[in-house]
Image 1 (cartoon, rainbow, N blue to C red):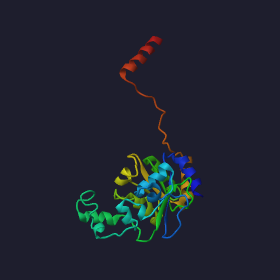
Image 2: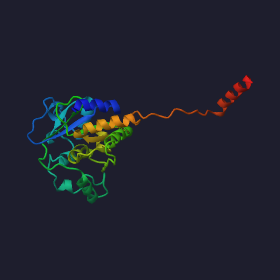
Image 3: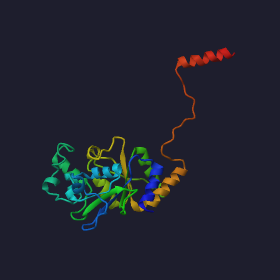
Image 4: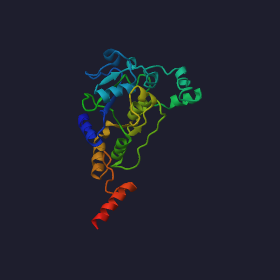
Length: 259
């Protein structure tokens, strides 16, 4: 199944309001997709990774970035584009903001998924419907009900659970690195930066799965849909409403007139 075909199934069953996104981590020296925009060169700004995914899912652009295109220090360090020096590992970045002290901050930094220095040369993101590269990972932003449908789809064939964990910070490492490394589906809580720079709304969350699971996910969406689990979630309407006493009195008077 190609990316565009998968995209059609996702949009049909999930009705998401922004484009599903394909993500690929490229080794050093690998050619970039011909139509990919480079933020620093083509947009005139450096960006955060969550911001790049925002361009892909909202504008339909394909972006390729290296450390030279990134503005976010956490992403530069975690993705191996800059040195994880003593200041970074000390916990100073989180101290007083996300952590009560440097020791707690250091544990937060250590918990983030990371690429080894030089492990990747660039990251490419683009709308699944029109990318010209094979993605490692599919990223879908939606509400909790849409994420639930993807959980249903991933578990349709085998059962079990979808496991996720978060620090509430640096969700780009979960979206890209953890998803690439584990090759497991996961739902992701957008971090503070994703909400500010990626413009992620309060009612949105993300779900990722490896592109190699495309057929399994589609069969799961179709199977659960056939079983009656669908989006939008249907509401129960076969009931008789109760109205205020004054309304009920009018009904009573009408009934008396008929006698």
